[in-house]
Image (tube, rainbow, N blue to C red; front, top):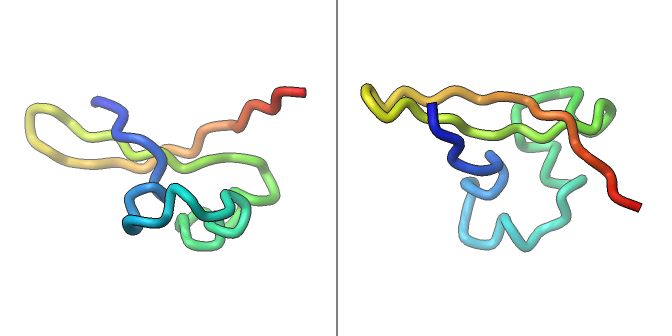
Length: 61
């Protein structure tokens, strides 16, 4: 599986420029905002199947 980026970045042309916390309402993970996770898309290079994986966010101070 190869990582294809954040799911919210694939929702439209302007999605990467929108507020991350607000876009979490559309990522399909009802707990992503509360749990501080980010949904990423992975795709199999052999068959093309995709999977969504929630990844823990890292906060830099």
